[in-house]
Length: 398
Image (cartoon, rainbow, N blue to C red; front, side, top):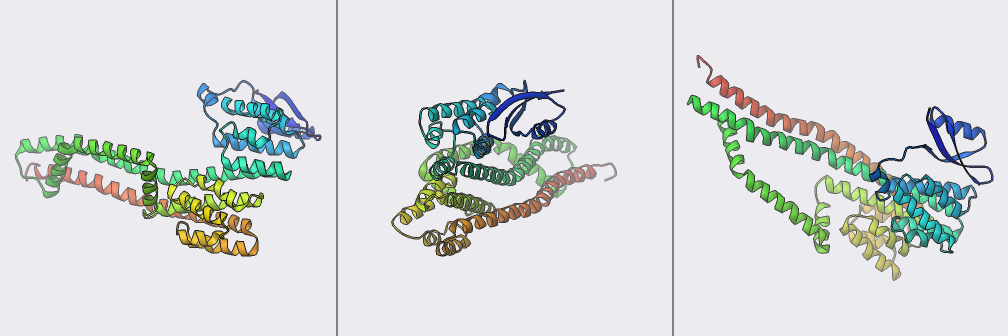
């Protein structure tokens, strides 16, 4: 029976540490709840994880979990310093534990929590901005929870987009690898066999052999060209102007460009709405949100919009003139600015574009699966058809 180490909070908000033997985590939680305790952290004693996991930089999901712990402890009345130390003990990675311990030391010396977190270099700017707002407004637990919610939705969004792009890429690479193996290994053997018989070959077989010869003759050149192309793209992306050009170009790609625009729109509207709801002014919110939009072209458009908003312009016309985001965004932002409910409108826009993104990816995968199967099946079928036609043409009695 495993032994579970727990950190719980009692009715007065005090953190209590202990351990107990139990058959499952759920049973531990139920027993502690019956005792009037709320579990903040629960781990199996002795499970330390690999050295790589413990020393690796904090993951977003780990930061998200730490923020939720801090929000819960803060809401329960636990002082910030005690909450930081409790969260540090429950941190799954040594790097996050050290960051929280250093944060606690700075807070103990009199620094605000937002500045202490910023000194660690591990926490996103949007988290720091929300923590700063929470400290000034006295709603730290609410802002911490909003920060954790934002990170969670960003993580889910990134996973959705990467999953949509990864699946067809893997299938396409496997298909190209299969075809390359056939052309380089199987077809040359078939060619030598047929040439020894000195019999005329069917047209499909002749075409297959010609393609195989072409691949054999230019394989090295093609590989060198591919390496140079990849190296050129990496070098170009490392340059500011080059990345701006690539990010602008990729948005014009059919289907995939639309997916990237929807993902960027969801990130922009969600975080901007989150910051405005927490009391951050629009210029400061735009300054925080712009780097979160990973596409440099769209991020630059937000920077330009912010510079005009600082001088008194409204946000909606800037978004409309930029033509960077879907037209609906500018229209709804204009309504939100007139009604004074811009944060709520942005939240609705985020949910709408998130739903559109999910549906677009679902349709894409629904189309790609049979399309890739058809393409790969056609190529493999052509190779086998050419082979059997050749065998049939040299069979006895022909």
